[in-house]
Amino acid sequence: MPDAITTVRRVQITALVAECRLPAIYPLRIFCEAGGLMSYGVKIEKIFAGAASYVDRILRGANPAELPVQAPTEFELVVNQKAARLLGLQLPPAFSQTLVA
Image: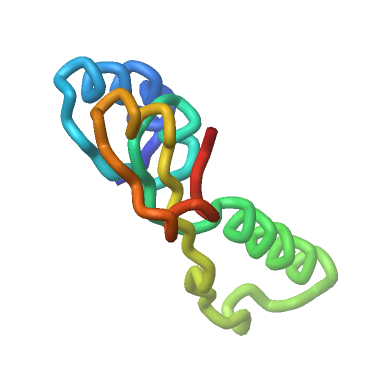
């Protein structure tokens, strides 16, 4: 699961997994941007935007106890083409919309 330690060490983690030639799926897009093969998880920008809207509502006088609980509604699948090629994987054409160069 993503936390401060794994997020800060994502370059080292993805490099070690790649060195071992293991296909891996990560929880966030930033792991693919660091060299990981795939990620499936929430769109972190949407989470931050939701948090910002809550802060705005609270600063405008809303009672935090009365605000509804929010859950993620948008998820994304990202596949790193370069990592896939290094592992010798053939990707189907359906993945063309989700790829990181």
